[in-house]
Amino acid sequence: MSDFTTDRAAPERVLAISAHPDDSELQAGGTLAKWAAAGCEVSIVVCTDGSKGTWNPDADLAELIAARQSEQRAAATALGATGTVGFCEWVDGELVQNPANVRKLTEWIRRLRPTIVITHDPWKRYRLHPDHRAAGFLVSDAVVAARDPHFFPDMEYTHHRPDEVWYFEADEPNHVENVDGWLKTKITSLEQHVSQLESTMGIASDHDQAGHAQFVADIHDAADRAAHLVQSDMSGFTAGEAFYRLTDV
Image 1 (cartoon, rainbow, N blue to C red):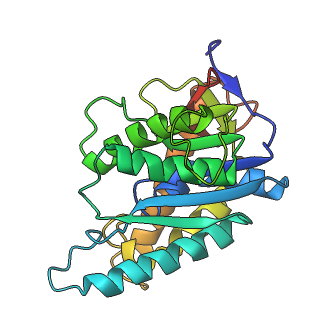
Image 2: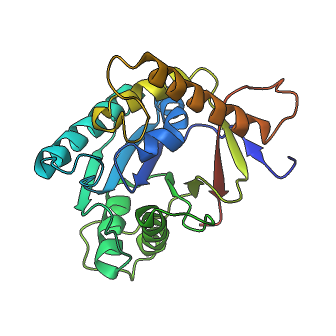
């Protein structure tokens, strides 16, 4: 517990880069909402188009892609985010680590100039989803490229070094952010991802009260586990979000 930090002051700007719509809200929604309320400019960029985010084999994928972008914008609004909501629109499930994709994310970082970048931990052991691994590695590479002027010198935006990178779903977390009072906002933001209610949240329909109650309980349980990483008696806070906080950027 002594190796953990907690409760960083809200940065001026934060950029959450996720593999799919809803990833940032699920893993860091409480933190993003808390910082937004404190005046931080919160931006969210999504790598893939979310086109595989359905169990319906007959789904119209163009409609799904459009819906997921609309849902992501609504989720950002629910968090109180005032920054950019951007989409790289790479094909869901087929995200790859290559120079062209690094360049695109480098452009986002240089353009938005975040104090903190938040993304997936690509080093998490036994991670099954390839997009989560790829997104984490792409963002890590893009942070390096964004900070150094000799990467992509033809780019419109000048180099920018974020102060920190935070990895969610961290294999070895070293920071827990206190999100007491922010889980309701996090849940509301996740509920904007209507297309994912069944596949991601386990809610069969709008009338599935039991499924919704279980989803809410799961969010609270995860926050409770994160809070327990840094305290045994829960005397400080009862809800947390855990990250690996990289400050040597």
